[in-house]
Amino acid sequence: GQNIDQPTEMTATEGAIVQINCTYQTSGFNGLFWYQQHAGEAPTFLSYNVLDGLEEKGRFSSFLSRSKGYSYLLLKELQMKDSASYLCAVRDSNYQLIWGAGTKLIIKP
Amino acid sequence: IAGITQAPTSQILAAGRRMTLRCTQDMRHNAMYWYRQDLGLGLRLIHYSNTAGTTGKGEVPDGYSVSRANTDDFPLTLASAVPSQTSVYFCASSPGRGGNTEAFFGQGTRLTVV
Image 1: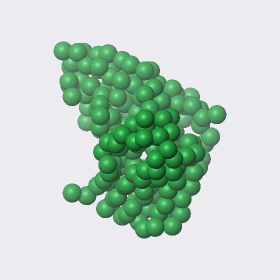
Image 2: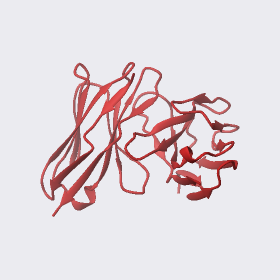
Image 3: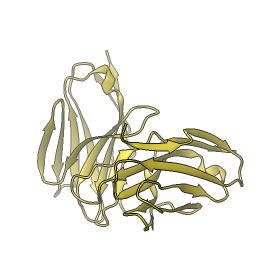
Image 4: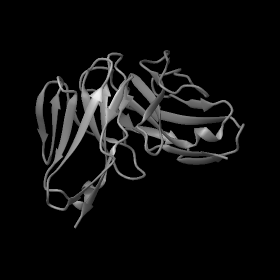
């Protein structure tokens, strides 16, 4: 079966750095996505990785290791508005997105 | 404002009733999707359409049907609603299937079947 694993919940302090991990086992691989979802709202796109390595976009970076079936999302200089759920999704061999359950990130002052 | 619109935003529905959730996008995206999101579970694909005139079944299609008569509209129909279909439903679209083609989501429809 196909599986995406993420921690259910994480807590971090405003101004700090947090790393959210994602491991996957899927039928094929055609890219990995990270989305942000605030409570009661729709998911919004954060990043895309298809090759191994780090993709940096402002305060957010995403890393991929295809051989390990592993990715992480790194959030720097945390702000209160970063409190949200972060969803990891892998596009499989059929070009369908397989979604993790999401990691709820709580930011404390 | 370009984007993807769902209607209604919320609905309470009696079990056994028929219901159509509407989804319209104005971005001329080829691919459209319907997901349901339940607490503790990831987004699960119900049905998808890679292009107008074609549809396919996702991970949890039972009890749901879709049509794609044109590029912009992708309605989801519950033929006879059951309480297990209580969920938040998201419609999404993307320009294509491959590459860095992010999916854009509607604001969601919160459906309660009683």
